[in-house]
Image 1: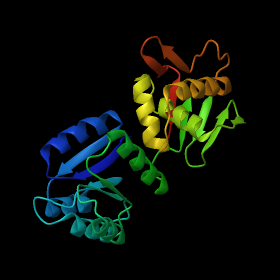
Image 2: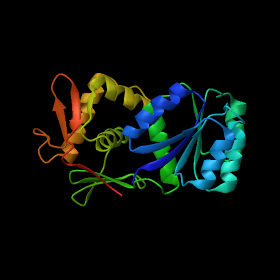
Image 3: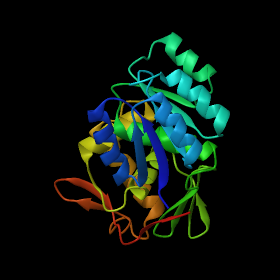
Image 4: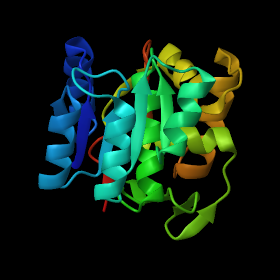
Length: 231
C-alpha cells in the first residue's frame, strides 16, 4: 500500500513536479492550494504525512499546521521559501516535524520524509537486497542472518541501491547523492573504494557481483529481480 501524502502548495509547477516524482517513489499525493480545503481533507481522509507551504491561496501554513495537529497525530513537514530563523522556529513551535527550504533536492526531501515517517512508525522498517536485510529503524544490516559491520558511507550506498532496485545510477549521481546524505566531500576515487569494500561484505563473489552490478561506461545498478522490500 502506498504512503498517502497531502501536499498543501499553491505553486502549480511544484505540485506537478512533486506529484510525478513522489509517485515514482511509491507515494500517493493529494494536492490542495489553500487552508480550508487542506483542513477539510485532513478531517475526512487518512494521510500518513503532510507537506506544507507557508504562503497559500487562502489562509497560511502556520494555521494549517496548528489545525492538523489538533485534529490528528500525523507528521507535518514545512516545504517553503521562508527559511529564515523566525519562520523555522515558528513552524517547529507549532508542532512541525521538519522544515525544508526551497529550492530543495527531491531525493533529500524523500529521505527526510522517510525519516519522519519512521519516527511515527509509518514506513517500511526492513529493506531487502537479495539475502541482505537492512533494518532502517535499528540501522542493522544482516546477510543470511549474520550481522554485517558497515561504515556510515557504506550503509548509505547500500540503502540507496536497495531502495531503488533496477535504477541505474551514474557515478556523478552517486557522488551527488552521497554529498547530500553524508554532508562531506566524496570524490570519484573514494566512491570506487567504497563500492569495492561494500561488495566484499555483501557479495558471494565480489569479483562477480550479483547484488550491485556495474553498468560499463555508466555507473551501477541493484538488480531488480533480487531486490525486494518487506512491510
